[in-house]
Image (tube, protein in one colour):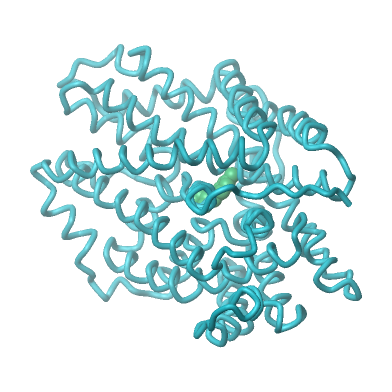
Length: 455
Ligand code: PFF
């Protein structure tokens, strides 16, 4: 096994990197869409409950496994219970799933890079007079973009190369340094957008919709989708938190770290709501979908046309999106990088290249899902949609259940307690609630999410 002893250097860096992983496109475009579908404030309320009651315990469990294992995800299972090697299959799943996710996420990251580029060059608004823009224009622009092969390919390659550069830098000089610079910038950008949203005429109506709950909207489907969103947004079940925690120093307090990460991740989602709902109320865009790519590539560019300096606003917005995407993709590719390093005893450099070259190839193929390879179908879907759907609907929930069952029932009980208290250095009142949640509540509820499409 490799004697890789990389660690995050500072407490702030460790938080920035973990929050960087959690804060991703899930917060920025998935959350507002889910919130709108779930009735605004009602969804927010259920979401906050899911994040606090389930998210924190499961995150603590993942951190504990990672720090106790001190290696890659598969190795962590083997190190913790050497006599129960079959459980390392959960580790395998936690490496394969994020690697599949990274393939289509690179494509999406490529889209965000394209739109940043197009905003910088002024191209995004070249056909728009400030008063005459409409959703049709931006819908057409997006369709045209993804249906031509060259640009998505080029920018997907750029996204993979960016990731490769960061990963080559290693944990502290690559991931930590990047997060230390980009995460504060992300919060500054969000604050600017919140400030602008507050000055819009529809701010009051938007905030009321987002913050004043109508309890009749709290239905079983709302609860299940809030739960799915909470897990996705906190990067649970992706092997990321197990991998990152292996780089946490022994003195790091895991419960505090989990609470900080969860609160910051939730804050970003709430800030996005504070930005989006006033904007759509002001410009009468309620009827337009927020789902998928519509919100970020159609609705918001349209909103910016109503503001002086549209190009500048879209530059800032797509910078925000690129930051969110890159700090997430480096975390997801780190899972398999670390795994190749430790399982095959490779140097960091070799592991990064062995991973990123196939990812480059597969993401390049995936970037053609809406153009040259649109006819290539897997279970009736193009490659992009297939990867998205299989990972989100099947592999992530199964990996999360596996992890909860393992940490709740199979791993020594002492392990969780030791990690939560830094080997008895302080007391943790949360030990029993965390254990009970990981044993019973979390696996049962995730199971419901998994089978809900069949019900
Ligand atoms: N928590 C991330 C998000 O909200 O976007 C989930 C994620 C997805 C992390 C894809 C990493 C990634 F590559």
